[in-house]
Image (cartoon, rainbow over all chains, first blue to last red; front, side):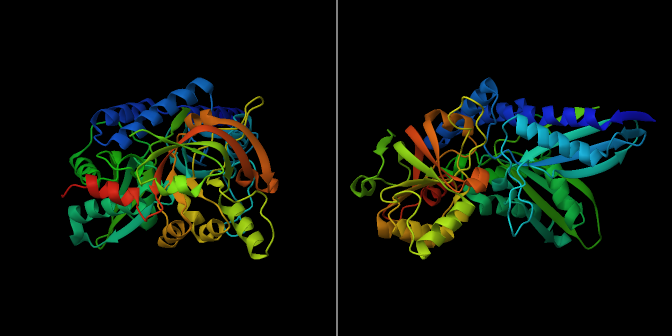
Length: 275
Length: 185
């Protein structure tokens, strides 16, 4: 067994929260720069210029890219041979979020109860998706996702006969429904298969994949269809409604074709730490 | 297109000239308010109470800043999704508010109320909080400190950039722009 101190995990998480909120990942920056080159709409190009400037300023000044520093969502891979000492893994991550958001001047955006809506004040609790894996490492992938794009998530339980065409249509429908609200140009995460809840989780997990990886034919097809919508950067019109589409698949039931769609705004902030 | 400069409190005549898609620059004061603050502002109006700021010609910015570091005027602050404020907006427009800044679509009711009162709705670039902060020169608390980031703040702005989405004649940038750039599959 390998021992990992809860305090050390909290410290790493705090640093991760800040780093990720201040700095746009390089693949996303490159995607925005490429979009600026091919965007035809003048207002759309201006938006892309402003987003690239925003990323530069945030990094230089060490401030968040967006005031919505998100619900702190973690995809955790815990090696079977790791033992956490001095506290639980959940509490260690929560403590890291608490400290990272306070000390990093990141906005607390969590309300404790969906009806009473009182702010918890420290952006806890985080959302954890835990996976047990082989080995003696702990991998934490952090995705602070804003509310505007989260509200655009959709689940389509298609009949299997809907096939590829149904999948493309569903993704396009989700992007069109969201329109300017999800802060386009968006990144479209698609979860194919599994059960209803798995499809949505896969869709979100797909957003963790690099935008520099080549797209597969289905991703290409969805991207082309989405970019024909004309919504454009911020909905001001144009060719670039989405920067990329990422699809993850899972085995599913004979009778099912679940399609989960999770949209990220252009400020797709993500990062990881391996302990 | 050259941006049109607007000074607050806004004059209705200046707004009547503007069309959807027109870039504008706000100078003067913006009042931040989002979900919870809207609920309280509209409750105050229903009870016949005065608002914590003079709504006549005022500009409401749908935003909740990130916390400011010591020495900073305000934390990074970009627009939030406006549609959530739709149920409260007609009452505020009736009280005299002349412009709204946020991002995303508005309801038919809001668009009708904008036309009725000669007011406009503008979008600032969502997710450009660090950039937009550069146009803010002062910030003071106006009301509801218990709401934390959702409190009402008064922001002094100099040439704060936005684009007119809904003008006083029912024009809508989102619909017009998507129609112009849409391609058949």
